[in-house]
Image (cartoon, rainbow, N blue to C red):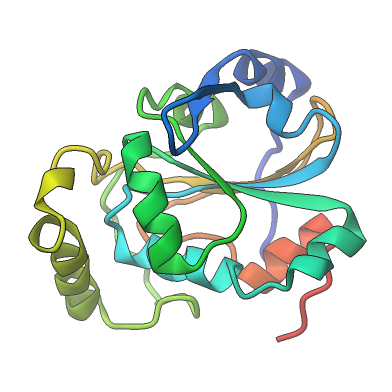
Length: 199
């Protein structure tokens, strides 16, 4: 199972709680309300065109909804592009949970997300295709198929991370992507959150 990195402190979470995120309609939601009353898995993805993160979110979507209900855990994905990208992203990945946008990337900075275009030494299991095919697919699904979204996807070098937080300003697990394909394996993330997921 993935070894944890330093968790977010109560002070860091307190600062983050005051910041807004945007829902798919562009409505502002205070970040802290997402996990005030419930243990929550927060997944910060890269830009909305990233094929690797699309694969990851699609795999997250395969975790049964009742597994979250039984564990009393919520799953939230946050992207660094514009909120207008969310609806199409959820359809593409069949993601049934809440998704928000942080186009200012202030939250990304607060949680310590890295900015680089580094590649991993080994391909993680959630990646469905090789690097070249992944890039071509991202281009096809992004600017070619959806030219009106150009400039709204978020910065290419912004990486994300995976966290288990709440209820309140507590964090029990933290993982910041070290490269562009470095999300925690889904089965490991579910274990850290106490969600039963047999694969």
